[in-house]
Image 1 (tube, protein in one colour):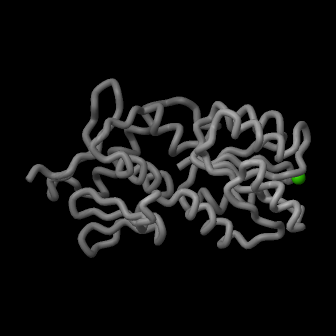
Image 2: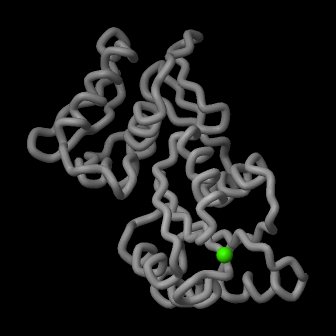
Image 3: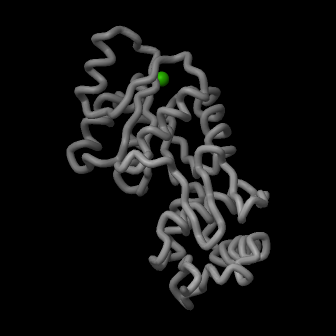
Length: 224
Ligand code: CA
């Protein structure tokens, strides 16, 4: 899952980015309203965290502009403006949620998870064979054995399992798992895929992460 932070205070932006990366999100930062809007409209993000007072154009304008063409991507305001009137104004501009500074990271994370929760309201668990990935506890279990994955391995597996049975193109994987500074090199993905296959020991459960030559990868259940 990929998140854009539009925030001109580097301390806050980097603090949030680091925390989210520890939860296996891919995170880009923009420190300017105009650039942030540009990225938001072109970058294929799963969620946007938006400051209100920004150089360039304000967060409110950024939010309104995004909503003109995109009614889906969740937007959460992160702002020091804290009156009821401000909150209402922010939500009316099209934001899904509004968090006042200073905030606790744990609360921000939970509010992000609420926005990203599947519409069915189900707990976010994804499975493949006897492997279960739990996004909330950030654990991967194979049967009752816990598999230790790196942040990127976890994010890659999550993406493949969210799209189980569908071919995931390399470009889609890069967009979801790596941030904007990733240098396009598909060899890196192969390394991570092989590492996942080894750690998960997929063959013995019949489940696979298959290579679709020239295109990408697909997670498939054991044949019954
Ligand atoms: Ca600001």
